[in-house]
Image (cartoon, rainbow, N blue to C red; front, side):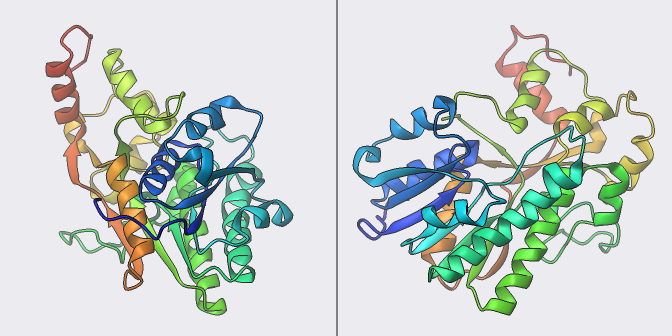
Length: 312
């Protein structure tokens, strides 16, 4: 993105230390914005050091420690901001108590951020949702391309115990309800599986799949469930076959049946900024570069890295 943002305009980014959040902060700083960035723990250099090393961070970046479920913790980072990018959401794949660990913080945290934005007079909020809030949708018309009107079937997701997807769907619905009732201007981005170069010191969930492929791990139902509960990998027939296969978690799937909607992390960051900078951008925005078969990805990785034991 060549154009610069309004010089010095203050924006808030929640979840700034994550894979996508870090790229968003970097792009905003590159465009001249001043950024309030939230992290879970200011004492954890794994969350803060790479952000503080970015160009412009010394004068235009301030870090805040935020607890999503504590309204008093949410407000300071948002105070004075012209816009808010809400990315923070719990990402726990093996939750012992999904309601407490995932659903409550995702929904309550989103509402706390929106309420603080409303109270602080923020002009626009851009919410990071997910393709996981759009699929699986067994009731979607056969043959129709999935678009922004599709919502994930929460009851199906609960049967599959894909709690992360449940949390993203419920949080986005709560956001739209709040925005409509309170007159808050929001826009939502729904990316697929986000891939690309890392700025963070730790590997995120999406990229962990690539490491498993590089390591020669076969793709089983249990592998998909353990590492891709956000349903950015989905099985044909909008989850119907997946539901059947989920009864056999060790079963090896035919990779021809597994598809991924992929997008580059830098495109996601730029898309978020475009949603903020263009007031006419309303509603939900599915953000996917292409839908690929997992087998094609595995074959491409095998060609690029022949020294690794990739299973074709």
